[in-house]
Length: 320
Image (tube, rainbow, N blue to C red; front, side, top):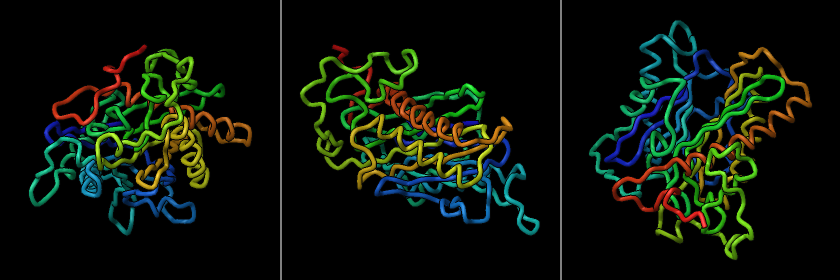
């Protein structure tokens, strides 16, 4: 289940993925400026096999407080890793930098993110909104507002894979200054406009259009979750997270920069009962990248305008 909490005045928020049962988890960080909590335990050689949820938050390092709110929610319900008679909710978290985005960050002594985490967990549901909500509330990309996006794919063998991404990269999700998404070849139907690639490609296609060059020192990071109902080991979950980063490359240019903390959490519920042979694994990992690319594009596509925005939304860009 996914829950969102949004503070419009703050121009920031929190997104929580709650596991109805503990899920095998992995993580991969490929950006140069990450902010994380409880990611070391996800290494395949470490003890805890599964997590109770993961958190994507705005707020830079302040946003790591959001995981404490989610822990409180789970602890109230007796959910967590059993350790000598205590239940300890396992909730890894990652943050994106959205501080100088036009929102009021003068919150006083304590940040609001713990409460936002609790609120997001309370809102957990199989149905949730995209765009300017949760961790995507204050997200930006080079030239356009970012947002929270999601996409899913069902493999021919029935295994399902889903992606959730808060798109806040230093680079651009569109080709040059056009409305055409880099992720166009992965699009299903018209889920992010159905424009395909521009023809011909514009002269600025290969320009490195960084956000900081357009609006000064605005920081970055795209954080995401890739989840499947396949049966995976912790090592295979890490491989899934690695593969999902291919979707970042398909969806944004450039990505994985020194000023992005780009990260993917991977979750495997095992509910399908299906383990992977080598051919199925290759297919799953390939589809993970495609699904992630779609999720990132959908986050930018679904963004809506708010007061004091630094960048316009995609829907305002000319389709010509």
